[in-house]
Image 1: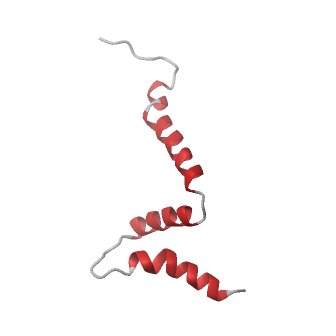
Image 2: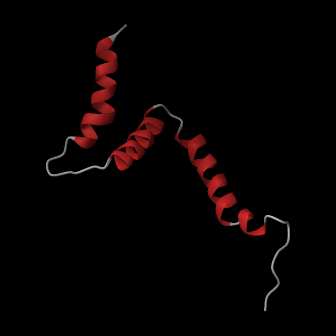
Length: 74
C-alpha cells in the first residue's frame, strides 16, 4: 500500500484545514467540513450539490404538501 499517497491526502484534507492557530472544532463540525472537502477533492461536488438542492426542496416544499393538497389562502 502506498502510505505516502494516503498520508499526503490526509495532510491535504485534514491538516491544512484544521491545523490553524486558535481554531476550535467540534467533532460534528469537523466531520461536516471534512466531508465537504473530500467531495470537492474527488470531483463529486456537482453531483452532491444537485442532490443537496433536491433534498432541500423536498424538505422545505414537498413535505408541506405531503397529502397533495395545497392550502388555500385565507
